[in-house]
Length: 71
Image (cartoon, rainbow, N blue to C red):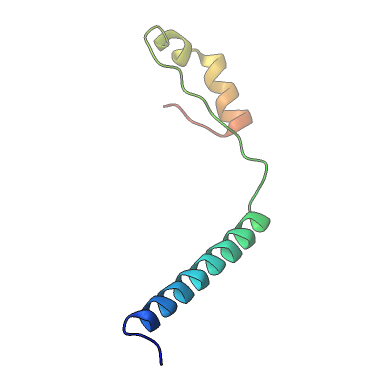
């Protein structure tokens, strides 16, 4: 028979393998269904942006093109 603790190690490794396989399969399904057309938005840091953000033309473009409301 198997030594004491050896069976538990084998079961643990098998469970770990099953979990890894499940995660990989789920990630593959989610990636295949996800929208690849994501938009990355970068934020500026520091001062001096108050006038830019308050600009009406800037806010109109955000609202019409990107459906983002800053107010």
